[in-house]
Each structure stands twice: as structure tokens, then as C-alpha cells.
Amino acid sequence: MSEPASKSARAVAAEVLHRFDAGGVHAGPLLDRLLPQTDQKQRATDLVFGTIRNLLAIDRVIEQFSGRPVRRIDESLRAIIRVGVYELAYSPDTPVYSIVDEAVKIAGHAGGRRQMGFVNAVLRGIVRHIAARQTPVREASAARMLVQSPQAGCEFDTDFLPDATSYPAAYLSECFSIPRWLVEGWITEFGPQGARAICLGSNRRPSVYVRVNTLKTRPGHLVEHFREVGIDAEVVAAANGSSQADMVRLLGPQAISRLPGYAEGWFTVQDPAAARAVCLLNPQPGWAILDLCAAPGTKTTQLAEWTRDDARIVATDADAERLKNVTENVARLGCNSVTVVPCTPAEWGRHGPFDAILLDVPCSNTGVLARRIEVRHRVRPASVAQLAGRQLALLAQAAALLKEHGRICYSTCSIESAEDGDLVRRFLAADSRFTLVHEELALPSAAPFDHDGAYVAILQRL
Image 1 (cartoon, rainbow, N blue to C red):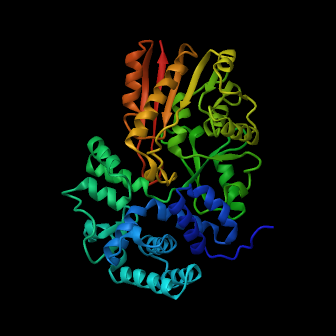
Image 2 (cartoon, rainbow, N blue to C red):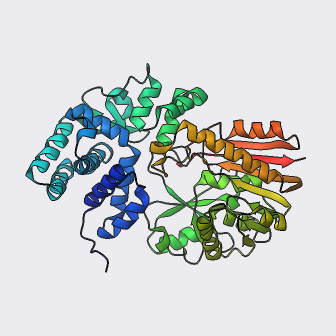
Image 3 (tube, helix red, strand yellow):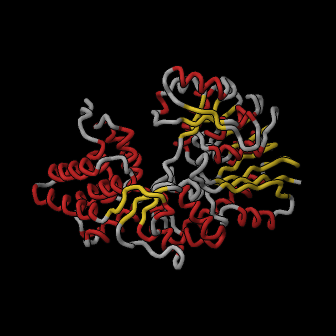
């Protein structure tokens, strides 16, 4: 028997964050287990993801304005305070009294009067240092503001961040809760303003886009169907003008699997940047295509839709458990041209050689920090180097399975050159049979239509 949905969003969020912080567990699965305890599921999700996304900045505020090292605060109380600070700094429409009062009540359930008094003192001390919970970015010193959006932020009465002009890497790292080594690399490659734009894109509340299954419907029809049942959505035209690449953006929070048309396979969730790989490959009906790193099947089904379900698509993945997701998505979307096979060279050889290979490699995910919220706390320079070695090996495997004049579409959701352009050039230097036809790097963006970061290279065998 399931537990009744009786807890508030804040209580659930604090519990998730406590377990996340104390045990090093992944927040997503933990949140999924605890969400049935509240009827404020979307709000609880925003509180958890928003707090983790801005964790370093939140801790900076706590230490600066309470005088207490975060790691010396009891774990359960620390989680409660972090949720409170997140709302104070990043949810300006939520009343201060409700944030503080409920945090104190949750602390009471976790401990007693002493714990309630401590949480009350910390949060009210921080509130006293907030000059404006939302003010235009241009009207406040960067060193005393936590940025909420490209236009606005929460202003404090004291400088607590590094000077943005003198120490741009330190400032961006602490303001946007992104590892300093990552920011330093972005500044080197894209300049301080480019790096700031990446940080804004990496810290946005990401929009939900759906790719319409053109085997069953069209973007305009799907939007009309959504609006008929009270769901606000809009068609977002593809940058290259191809109507086949148009997507639909949902204009409010929704439970995706409960949307009309989901079970019927009318659409699947996909960011516009991720959708570019198949668009640039431009696969044709009749081709033999291998999707070598297919799970969970988002791009696999896009290949089928793009070729009007008239290609011979073979999908595989090294993760046998996640390969089941490919089978499920192929079935839901009704893609009859896809064959899902085990990840063995014998299977690839039996179905090949191929006209095209989609190689959406495992990567550091630095282009999708807004969605994969824990990556910023786990990624390390050494892991990027290890991934690059694996990516290069996968490219060599793909090259051996391709027909003459065939194409490899190499894609990542990383924006690190070691995994993108530099790696592709290492491959080309080692295999003179291939030439670079096209490459494209999309950086995370917060406006006007927000999107993730992604890299795509089209390589052709001579």
C-alpha cells in the first residue's frame, strides 16, 4: 500500500537533498521514490533540481551571511536551510514568511525546539542581507548578486563573490556553481562573455521540447490537440528552415507520459540541439544505418521518422539493460524499420556494412548541465580524458563497419574540444580514408529559445 500524499514539496525536497548529500546517491531515482508522498510533485522537483544546480552558490551565501561553515551544520538541517536559501534567492515570487516558517516547522519534525531556533536564525540572518530579491542585472554589482536569468538576479547588501572583471573564472564558478576548471576552459575558448552565456544556459530551468513523430502526425496538429485539452504549447521552427525538423515546446510543466498522444507514439522528448545530429546526417530511405550507441532510442526513432520508416536501421548499445528502452521506444513510436540487436561485433558484421553510422558517444555531458544536474558535481578532468579514449576507439570501430563513400555522424552532448573537434581531428589524422564534411557546435543557451549544448561532425569515407 502506497504512502498517502501528505507531505509538502519542501519537506520532500529536504529529505531528498539530505539523502543525496549524506550518501552520495543520485537524486533523480531518489526523488522518483519520494514524490508519491506529496501532491506538489512539480514544485518538489524544481526545489530539488534547482538547489543542486545552484548548490555552490547557495553554500556560499549560507557561510557568508550566517558565519557558519556549511559542513559543520547537521546534515538534515543543512538540507532544510539549502532549500530555504534556494527559494529566497531564486524564487522571488514566493513570500519570505512562508519560506522561513515552513523551514522552521520541518526542522521541528526533524529535531526539536533547538533545531527550529537554529534554522530560523540562519534564514532570517540571510534575509536581513538581501537588498532586493529580484532586480535588473545591470543595476547591481555582480559581486553581490546571484543571477536568476539573463535579465535579473537576487541582490545582497554585501560583496560576497569574486570580482567579475579581475577574476572572471572564480566569479563565474562561484556564481553559477560550475567547477572552476570547466569555466577556465570555456573562457580560453570562448572568452569571458561567451563563458558567461554558457553558464547562463547551463543554469536555466530548461524548457521541455517534443519531437513530433512525423510518421503519425505533424507539429501543428499536435499543438492543436494539446490546446483542445488545455495544454499550452507552440511550434518552434527549425533553424535551417526544414519543416521536418520543427519541434513543439510545452509552455508549462507537464507529466510527459500522461500527455495525450504519448501512449499512441505521436511524439518523444528531445532538445533541439540533440535533434541536429540526424538532421545533419540527412539519412535517406533505403539506406542501411547503424546506431551504435542507441540507448534510450531517441535518435534511433528519429532516424526512422526521417527516412519515412523505409530504411534498414540496426540499433545496439553496450548497456544491455538500457537497450530495453530502445525496444520500448521503437514499439511506442511504431518504427517498423528498426531492428534492435545485442552489442557484439558478430551482430554488426551480420547486418553490415552500412551506408551511415550514427555514433552518439558516451560523453562528459557538459553541454547538458541544466538537465543532468549532478554532472557538475561529479565531472573531473581525468574523466574527460578517459572518455576521449573510449570515443576514439568507438570511431575506429564505426569506420570498420562503413561502406565506401558512407558517412559517420559523430555526436556528443559535450562542449569540450577534447571530446569534439580535437578528437575528430585526431581520428582524421590517423585514418586518411575519411574527410570532414561538416561540423557544428551548439553552446547551451538561455534565450530566446533555450537549448542544450551539443557537437556534431559528419565524416565521409572516400
